[in-house]
Length: 125
Length: 231
Image 1 (cartoon, each protein chain N blue to C red):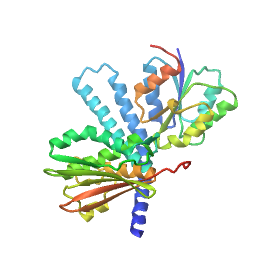
Image 2: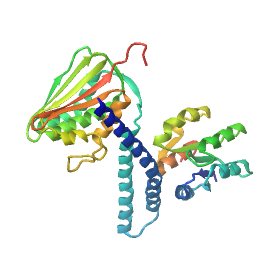
Image 3: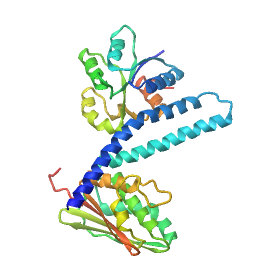
Image 4: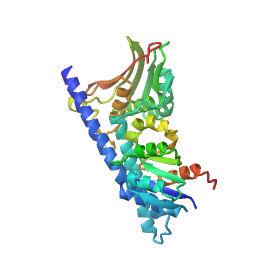
């Protein structure tokens, strides 16, 4: 079973995404901040994909991507952001190989998220 | 001139407020719409409950739409810029509305300049502006009338005028035209001209109105022409 890490500082959104992805057949861990997310990513637990919010207090989504780049670990990631912020992130995201195609704008349609998850994990069904 | 600057500043402040508000509303809106979607995945026995959840989901989509439009006013993006023939771009919009306007006894007059320089704009966003201005002109004409569209070049600018023989606007209405949610229509959202303002602004252009009560309104768009080698 694929393991997904959902990172969002808004508990309601983290829980929503976890519930939905679990219902869609994935094993999901949620994290309410960048620090906790890094701990999970650096642990022994396998993570196949990350759904990552950009705007978080302390360690932001971008910080998490930078840290991962620093230790040369690349995990397929879906970026969550409000459309207001998207443009300012695009240049930095490009440095880590992410484009607009990897971004989902809040409020997210859950089935669009599911499509993107399946594409990233190369699930054909 | 000072009044214009004050107006610009007021709209800029309003834009910031709107953008901040939109950002804050996005998260709770996602929780509402997402939980509605999640609930609809359950096998709900009660048709009433099922329908109510569908309403929650549909209405949150509507709220999302309003927020997207507000964001176009407050922080519009230039989007996909292409070199466009403005006359063709207006015609593309007219092809959608002209028949319907004719049925309502509204005649469309094209007064296009030949050999206008092409212009670098976001085609879709500009069509949204034209559609809004045409619909406003249509709404302003109560029985029958004319909408005359004129294109021309004026110095470093390309100029487009939408002149209607509708009911015109009072000074009071003119002052508040670009304010989000300000509307004189029974069923309007009051976002159309705010969005137009944002789109024209991000193209470094100008949108202005001249109007006389009982005689009609002219909406004028000025768009800067790109010089060869320029940005």
